[in-house]
Image 1 (cartoon, rainbow, N blue to C red):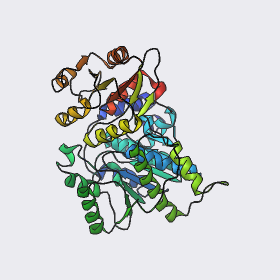
Image 2: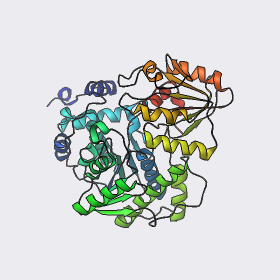
Image 3: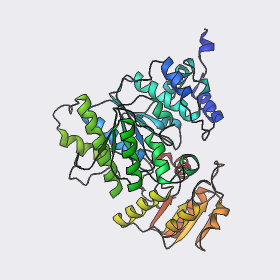
Length: 421
């Protein structure tokens, strides 16, 4: 095979163009394609410890805490999360750092050589993460599931551990209309003899996880009573719910330590690891504070996009004493808007600004969204218009931007300087 034939993508732009053609939201819930590529690459069982994080809310934060604990121990850690805000390169990190475009292009070509032409958008990125983590000889790889558990692309990877964040109602059109149905789908990621770790769950979800663990022969471990968090106020992620995410991640990490016998690097001890881990964990758009600038109001960015996430956001605002003078809100058209609207309106006594998404066909049109709100709602032509208007309204007070990670993506496209800590 010639060099020209071998290189499917000559540049990173070629690769991104291929991704766009695949379609961000195209799903084909089967493992046959990803199985074939991983078998061809001899990476069905990766040559490093692999953890999968499954759930409805808190997956990204829990994954970030888990990565931070690993790095604090001195491990080389790979982290795979989704979605991204500005570039797909945000999804695959080595010790918290993105890889350059040339490396991405090389790995994409390697995947294609192993039969990756038929992979979906999420499958392709998942396989690329497996390849990259092998290339970098990571000591630990963390894979955040995309949707559900039984059929998610990350479940095709042979893993050492599965971690369950809180399970709630979301993606009901795909996963099921009840907590029990959704939990059963997510429980499909369990495997015989593989530990599964969980912490905060509803009674309904926990009952299903216990039942399915017993059925497949998995060991379900509760975080509470297994580990204790350090007594520190230095948390990289803000809110009481983040302490729950940190507890879950720490319990998962303890399972891995017990399996692999890892020890802290240099002169540190486990107390140091815990303190550094909770302080260093960070992920954009999770109750992220952006101080006011000449063009921006004092902002809080949060990716809350379903009922459980808005309950957590409400608690975080109460805990921190933040009272938004205005809210910028937008959501996808598959959300339970009737349920979300009262929760949004309860977060402020001020205006609710509804920007029109610029490039998202699945977004609920701002004008139609406004019909669900009270008289405080204002339709804005763009997010930039909403930001300008919110600064006029709020003055020196805070503004909350929430409702969709894709709305946050539009913000970070305008202000990429806030995408890093």
